[in-house]
Image (cartoon, rainbow, N blue to C red):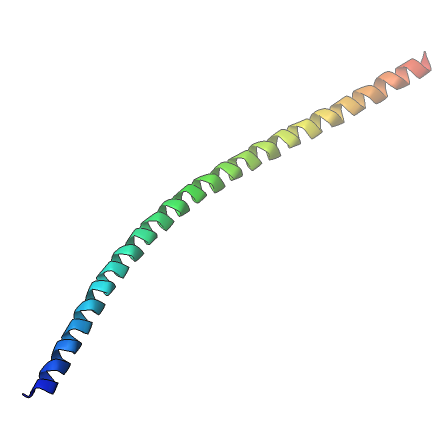
Length: 86
């Protein structure tokens, strides 16, 4: 091999080594990013579950309150009628 071929082999080997190191560094960073995103997704799921539980509680409370309002309005009507009759 002449010097031009040796020089080309050295340049290509160096470029390949640099790209290999960069690929490993990028892969490590991607793995770290995926872990962080997974933690965020887990926390978001917890928030969604909490919001669903809160919405269910409010739904049941509103249902009970509407029933109480209905009963209160009936009682008011009855008491008003009794006052008007007496």
